[in-house]
Image 1 (tube, rainbow, N blue to C red):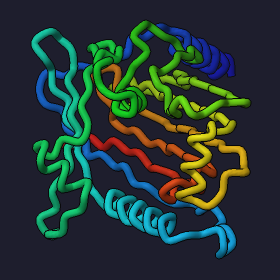
Image 2: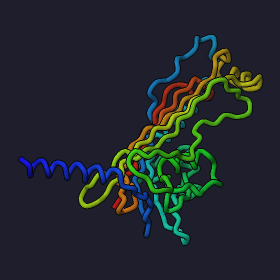
Image 3: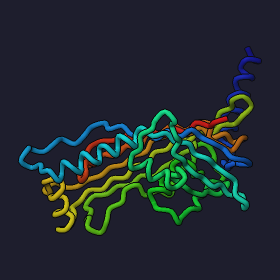
Image 4: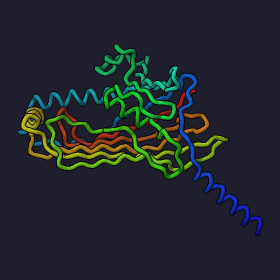
Length: 282
C-alpha cells in the first residue's frame, strides 16, 4: 500500500513539474514543409430579407453576384508551404490547388492563376514573430492566426496576443460601442510517441456597432434600401492547435472563424463561419 501511495505521489509531482516547466515554441524548417489547408466557408444564417417594396434591382443584382463569388471560393482547395530563408526566418505561401477534374474557372481562381496560384504570402521569424508588416492587414491576419507563435518562453497557463485586427471600417463609420478580446493560451503539454506537444487554445473576439456618415448611409440605401438601423459587426476565432516542440511544427490545427453582421451591402449580412484546418503532408 505504501509503495502504491509513493508511486502516486511521485507521479503527481512529476506531472506538476511537467506543467510548470518553461518551453520555447519555435519553427524548425530545414526544407519545404507542406500543409493541406482547409478554408471552408459555411453560411449559418442569412439576414432576413426586407419587404418587397424595399428591394430594388441594383441591390438584388449585387447580392446575387456576391453569393456566386462566395460559393465558388468555398469550393476551392488550398495548400500552404513553409520555406526557410537565408536568415533563419520562415517564408509562407498559400497556393490554390488545381483540381484537374474541374475545368471551370471563376473570378477568384482566374486571378490566382495570373499570380502562379499564390493567394497568400507572409513571413515569420523562427520564434514565430510576424515579420511581413508590408502586406495588407487581411493577409497578415491569416498569417497570424495560423502561424504566429508567442516569441518568448512560456509555461502552461501563460497567455499572449496575436497581431490581428479583424474588423476594418473606413472613415465614414462612427462607432458608439466596441469590444476586443485577443487571447491565446498554452493549455497543456502532452507526451506522445516520445514527442512533447503543446496544446494551444485561441479565443479572439472583436465587436463594433455604430453609424455611417451621410455618404455611407446614402450608399447603403442605394444598395440595400435601408439605412435606419445601427450597423454592427462581430468576428470571433476559436481554435485548438497541437504544436510539436521537438519537430517545431503544427501536427494539427483546427479552428472556426465566425462573422455576424447586419452590414448587408452586396449580400454580406448574416452569420457565416469559416473552418480552418492545417494538415501536414508527408
